[in-house]
Image 1 (cartoon, helix red, strand yellow):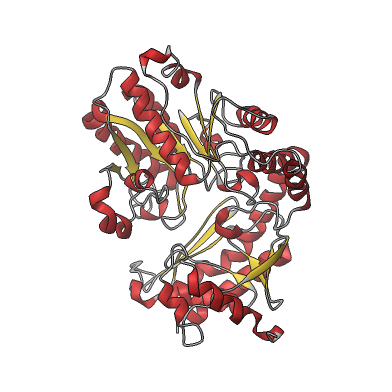
Image 2 (cartoon, rainbow, N blue to C red; image 1 turned 120 degrees about the vertical axis):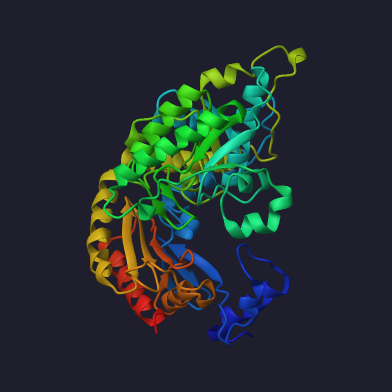
Length: 458
């Protein structure tokens, strides 16, 4: 029999024999025990905590890749899943429908910004981006503007890892590797407040970047389908944050130059930024809103693209016109996932989630405040339940550490040794915990991160 104390090792060995993990240099795991990165088998979850095969606990400071909202093994969502599984697990979504999808579409239309009245389901965030890009292009094609074939994205953006989503992302490693396969976007300077001029406020950075976007549209609107942005926070790009004024300016420019506005709220939607959707803080409605991650509370893959009646009507015609939208997924509108999403949205409806989040965010901000004075911290920034600490080699010049130093990885490993899951983005240590976290657990995350930063600087 396997020694109970060796269960992690045994499961990790079985995993590494066959499984190829995402966003991972597998050689790091092969070096486990020799200065490498451990492969941790998680066997259950309780609230904000994950428990491995040997009973060790890890506070999930990143909501398991930003998906988990109301805790692991949430009983309300689990009950909805169990009930649905006894009734209908799946049915083809072409020519058929079912109550969970209908109810979910109705609820999404109710809670999203005004004018988003049509819902197209897909099965993950990257797929939602693909849908929005194709739908925007196809709209213009159906309108007689086949010359519109390009997209404007922000520098530092990330929208997913399928080819279309990567095409509108600005991640150097991905673009270098897959460049021959990708479309070429038009890149607009990000309104990232961290990159502002000395003395420039976030609102002033946003205004300057809106003016630069105007200049791009003056040159390229005739060939542009849409501008795609992550509202308020560029998450995978390093948790870069910007002022809502940029979204307001973007909406006006898209209207003026006849291009679509695609809001990628996959990571920032469902309360992450302090409002149900980030676009609300600018009082704007996009032409397309992409949702996923927290949509099911982190239980099952599901995504949705919401758009307007006006866009929908560009595809609505006799079959012979050949204007139908061409996109499908085998698991489109999966009843189990839709039921999980309905249970998740019911929690928002029945409990004061956003009010509680504002109190938790304020506590997180207070606990992070001392790190602003750290000699290797260039910035501590926060938008709602997302906070980030930018580590640098030199505070005065903001000169970054060499990537090969892997300082962030040191913080990650330190966290695992001290019951915390912190998975930095390069040298940006960030916090995006589940909404069920309490103040004592936030204290634990910040304490572990702070000691990990100290150790990483040695």
